[in-house]
Image (cartoon, rainbow, N blue to C red; front, top):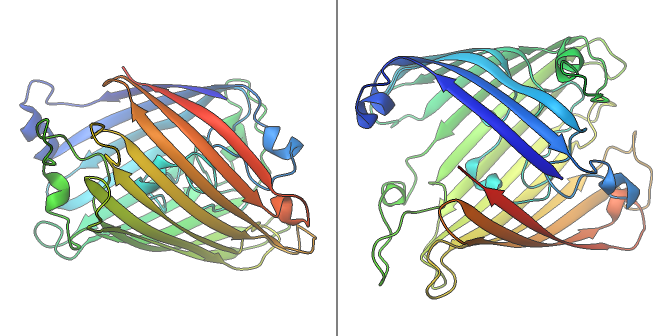
Length: 347
């Protein structure tokens, strides 16, 4: 699979210093398009329950965001309105971006019918509030999506998305807290014999949330709870390390393919001498499949992933990956061993 992204951001204050731009109160317009090409259904052909990579959308051009956002800087209320997806503002933790498999690099493998998971979008409104100074009480997010036009928006440029038609809405509430042990150090440079290097791993984060999907399709309404914890841990291997856990627990409805999802992993920056910008990632997930939708002796699929991000220069990195998929498709079938190579090019 190949994904090309056009990301355009517009706002006032282009002549301001960068620090003032980041901290000041300003409005921003955001337009994003994604072009997908390749073989998006390969995972189904080999009998897996989920794609082996996050980039597994029907081929063609997608509108992945068209929104207006007010950013308050260091505090106050933030607003966002327009067409956008759940991720990356909801459910998804930054630590998940280090992985390849869709059950790991995703919104905690949420599979509730109709939810706008990237690249799908829906009309939405989001309000964020950060009480207190410097995030001492964390931040709250309240949002809602209108789900009726999700399929039409996905096919705006001729893509055949194959999404189920849903009539209804989704409401979400989420709390984030970053002032965990190691949060200050996460914003400093790493000491290295060759000179200081930037930290590539995300800062510590506790994230708790809940969502309710109200619809009139066959599955009816459903609700789910999500949570994740990213912790900085001192380990003898590497320059910087993170351990993390996540959970997605929802109602067993016909509109929810994964009522229970458990996941965890380890990230290490600079695990090899002389390679301070490389990142080693290990992750494990277990998805309990809804018996109303999947029949089999083992109603779950588990994934173990090992990958290594090899930074060639500031623009190019290679990511070899090894995956072991247990009970693929929730059936009593042979495990799948998959290898791959990711190419990330940034301009």
